[in-house]
Image (cartoon, rainbow, N blue to C red):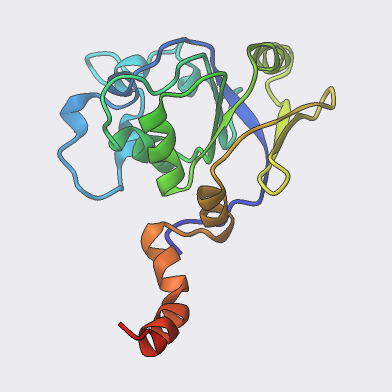
Length: 198
């Protein structure tokens, strides 16, 4: 498997109520030299997390111990800007398995789905409800059920459905990337090759 299977995720969440976060803010360009997916989490939101002397900025949410979890809740239009895949790598490497927003940039959304991060798009009203609940209680949990394509704010029971491409859903449920998916069809491909008249 390319990554862990995603079925149901129940977790507290880290709130980032900032709109129009682009990929350069997620992972600055100077950290794009590596070709493996390792170590990028150290520089997730680097310029927002650290001062010039590498000391943590106390007012940034990732440096606040009261927030934790495998879900990042972000403002509208998350992942805009350049198409760098490293932005998704950084989010995954940091430990997030789901990003919730009211709108995602298309390329960023696809990059997430390709590496095992589930982008869950909700209405603006539901997003505001999530932010308010986390502000009231940082231990507030969300439940994301990929099978039913439903996200639930457990403290209130409020829930919404979300859309996902069927092929990407199947891959995430099985922990497949595109190559894994092809390998899962190896026997069927072999039978076709043997029986095809061409």
